[in-house]
Image 1 (cartoon, rainbow, N blue to C red):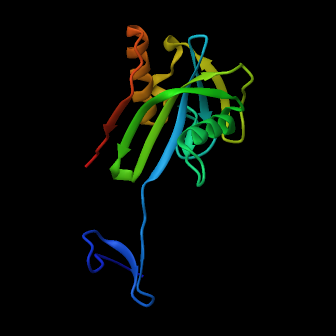
Image 2 (tube, rainbow, N blue to C red):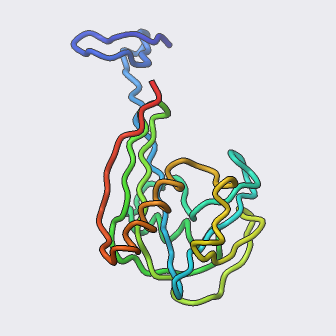
Image 3 (tube, helix red, strand yellow):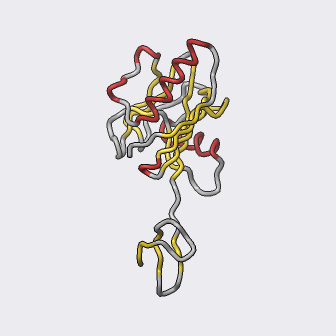
Amino acid sequence: MEFKVPEGDNLKRYYCPECDTIFYTNPNVVVGALCIRKDKILMAKRNINPRKGLWTLPAGFMENAETLQDGALRETFEETGSKAKVKMPYTLFSLPHINQIHMFFLADLLDEDFGPTSESSEVRLFTIDEILWDEIAFPTVTKTLKYYIEDLEKDNYIFREEDIKLW
């Protein structure tokens, strides 16, 4: 296996000269949901790495053969045991430095039947004043929550897309 620019290409790729095959790698898609119930936000404390012990919105890697919305709802169930209904696409972040795309949907939490799972040690509903800002696992979650607070104050929820570049 070699890591080089194949003939006719412009980016380095993994290449097997023996079988003349290029092995393409592409960004991973993380999907999640900002679930709201009675003006409270559903969050889970991570029971897995990375960032174990910190709070997040339910989210994770999209699986093959599922839609963005299906992935977000699956992750919500896997991490909180709860069911939600997607209202709208809410935030989309490109993170080229880690080859990821993070997509969050705004969703209604359908009931208060939630709790810890193998992926979360604690699950709870937070008012905006209760959010533990210093204990949030990922910058995209922080940004999504801050956008939600802005939109809540204006009573106008809009989709946002941005790049987060660290180099």
